[in-house]
Image (cartoon, rainbow, N blue to C red; front, side, top):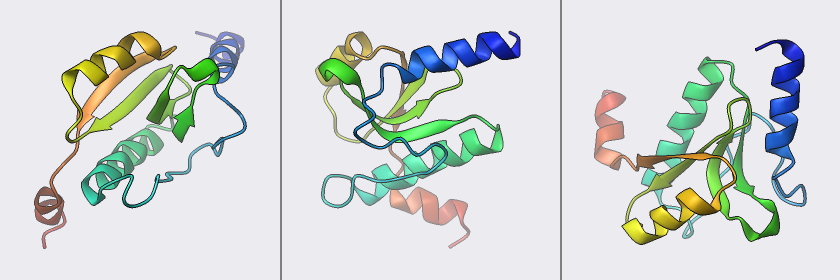
Length: 121
């Protein structure tokens, strides 16, 4: 894919994002407690770090236009929404797969104890 094609694809993805909300590219933002647990935020941060390491642009806490939903992390280079789940029901995840204007990747929230182990604590 050449530079022009990448630009057009990215603009098509961004055209579905509601600009009235978060549009800071490359910033990992949280919804805040109690809307988001520590496990949820840490897992989302890990996704953001991995995308940054790969030099992939993303936006967090994205609201899509026309009530198409809200995702945790949107990879705007490849058109992939990452949704971190902890206790969400299968039915809710299933609906998001059809509602979101981009592909959806579901990531299970890590337990805080797993993070402590990874950090050597």
